[in-house]
Structures are given as C-alpha cells and as structure tokens.
Length: 521
Image 1 (cartoon, rainbow, N blue to C red):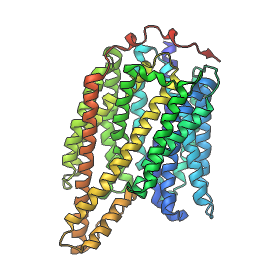
Image 2 (image 1 turned 90 degrees about the horizontal axis):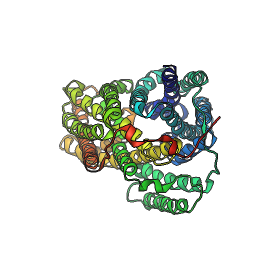
Image 3 (image 1 turned 135 degrees about the vertical axis):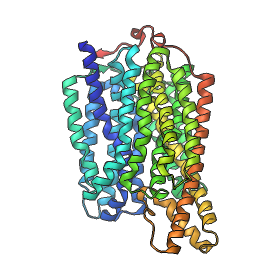
Image 4 (image 1 turned 180 degrees about the vertical axis):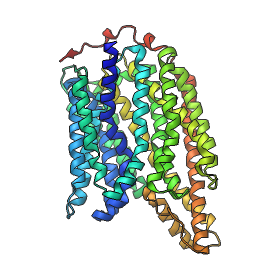
C-alpha cells in the first residue's frame, strides 16, 4: 500500500514538472500581440518567439531521452525544471532595448531545450514507478491532467496579459518550485544506464529534425514555392537518413534504430505520428475559430477547448482501464474511429455561427472522447513494447515522432487554411467590396492567428455586413480543416484496425528483468 501511495506521489511530482511545458504550448501564442506591442518585435521575430521553442523541442527530444538514461531520470527532470524555470524568468525579464528580440528568442529556445530534457525523463519515471498492470491507469491520469493544462494556456494568457505579458513566463516559477518540492518528498527512482553518449548522432538528429521542422514551420511565411522551404525539408530528411545509417554502425547509438524492426513498436509509432497531425494543431485551429468566427476574446478561447477536454479527461481514464485489462488494441481502434466521426460532425457544425458552441458541444466532446481513449494507451503501449530498450530512450523516440507529426500537421493544415480562406473570403465578399479589397481582407484574417484581428464587429450597416461575411468565410475554411483532420484520423483508424497489436499489458512484458540492467543510485 505504501508503495502504491509512493507511486502516485511520484506521479503528482511529474505532472507538476511537465505542466509548464503544456501550458506554454498555448499561453505564449495568445499573448503575442501584447508582447509585440510592448517590445515592437518584427513579424519574423514574433514567429520565432513561438517557433524557436518548438524547434528546440523537436531537435533535442532524442538526446533528452538518452541523457535521462545515462545520467539518471530524476537528475534530468530536476535539471530540466531548473533550465525551464530560469529561462522563463529571463524571458519575463526581457529588456526594453534593441536586444529585446534576440534576448526573448534565445531564452525561448533554451526553454524548449529544458522541456526536451525534462519530458522524456518524467514520462520514464511515471512508467517505472508503476507495475505493468497499473501503468494504463497511471498514464491515463498523467495525460488527462497534463493535457488539460493546454486549455489553461489561453485562459491564463488572456488574463495575465491584462496585467503584464511578462507574467505568462513568471507563472512558471511557482509551478517549478512546487514540482521540485514534490520531487524531493517523493524521491523518484534514480535509474541509470552508464554508457558513452553518441554526441555525433545527437548533432545529426538535431540538425535533421531542426532543418525539416524549420522548413515546415516557415512554409506559411516563405511559401511552398520558395526553394528554401524545400531545401530545409528535403535536406533535413536526407540528414535523418544519414543519421539512421550512422546509428546502425554504432556500438552505443543515441537511438537503437533497429528497435523499429519490432512490428508492434513500429505500428504504435505510426499511430502516434498520425494522431499528432490532428491532435496538436487542433488547439491552434479551434482557438482561431472561436476568436475569428465566433468573435470570442482570447481569454474565452480556453473555454472552447475546455469542452474538448471534458470528454478527453473522462475517456482517458476509461482508456487506461481498458489498456490494463484488455490491452491497447480495443481502445486504440475505438478511439481512432470516434475521433474521426467527431471531427466530421464537429466540422459540419462550424458554419452554424448562430448556434455557436451550444450546437457544437456534443461533437466536441465526442472528439475529445476519441483522443482520450487513444493517446495515453498507444503511448504507453509503445514504450512497453520497446524490446530491451530503456524507458528514457523509448519515450525520447515516441516524443520525437509526435513532435514531427504535429509540425507536419501545422504546416500542411495551415497552408490549406490560408488558401481556403482567401477563396472563401473572396466568394463571401463578391459584390460587396472590390476584388483587391477582398484579397487584402483575406490576407489580414489568415495572418491574424490567435491575435483576434476581427474579434468585434464594427458599427454600421456596411461594415457589419462585411464583418459577418468574413466570419462566415473563416468558418467555412475551418470546416475544411476539420474534415481534413477527420480524414487523418480515418487513416489512423484503418492502421489501428489492420495492424494494431493485441495483448494485455502483462503479456507484453513477461519478465521486465530481461531488459538491460540499470543501476540504482
């Protein structure tokens, strides 16, 4: 009983540790207009305040997982928390001088590095702290609670920015202190696997992931027709292919690439990749829709996402129990199907602006239920099925896969949204304004992002008519995006139905001692 209580205390500590990273996924985007206004950042600088963090995450996840194994999971969680908290404080202390843009971008990149070090180690500690037949329930709590923090970002960002935008970074400091206190009290297991660190492999995977994600992130700015976009994407993929060949020849590789020869592990990662194309971008596009189409304030956008997490949090607990009792296959197959159906029904309701969230909420909840059944079980199953592989390395791999999928989703879906919106705005404003004005309005709305450029209707008959036409156009564009996400989840369902491995948790790992020995500190 004491061991069980200790496990849940460790779980609380890890949730507090990683909660900062989940909040930061949305809180900064919401507050960017205030930051730009106060510091006079360039448009490129604004993009890099957001993208620098995500790029650093993508490039360093694999190294973070390996460092956790070699230096100790607890050590790397504490190190990651300290890096994240200190860099957050320095982001909040950005000087109002000519150095402001470079300062803020640099420490946002450092924040991403702290998160990349912290997250694989924290996830590995949670998995290690529970026996095989209880991991589903534990991971359901982990993903359910930390996932909900994503919706707190827009709410917190909206209110904190009314005081000062610097507070969106400073809020991480008390959270970090609480996490360190819980870590000190719970004393998570300090597992180590001393071995040489493959720094050359780390450089290759960081360069490959960094270039590929950079090309995807900047595609909306540079354009898909710009050679630089494709040089980055193709160059990054070629470097990653070189990384794979390099790792196959190493005695102590950063990532044991041969692990993907295990069919079950490979399928789980394909599913993680596909669901991330829809899951992570969902928060961005839903937030944009609630502001630009429904006319909500930025702080209210979080309430829209909370409806989703109402279904997600409850279903994640069901998914965890199913995983423990029947294995991942049933909950992954059903979850993928419900998410696909939910996206279709939700998307079709987006153009009903009069009904608003009141007409959409059953389908928002249904989509949340689908992802709740899916995310935790498939992530846990992937780590458990990693043959003779440490938990830090396995979680580093799965998080890299998820991050890359999310980057592709944001880039491709974002491009579709811009193109669709230009067409829809032109159609809605046909006969109301000249064509060149319609195109200018479409560009403005498409680039508004979460700044809420059209969050309130102008007074007057003509202005109000144009405003509502733009709202309707953006709703139609959002419908296309949600139907695309439904298509991705339909593919995810087919992969799960055809290839998702069966087997209960205890059948997956008959004897965990078969894994390479770990030393305890």
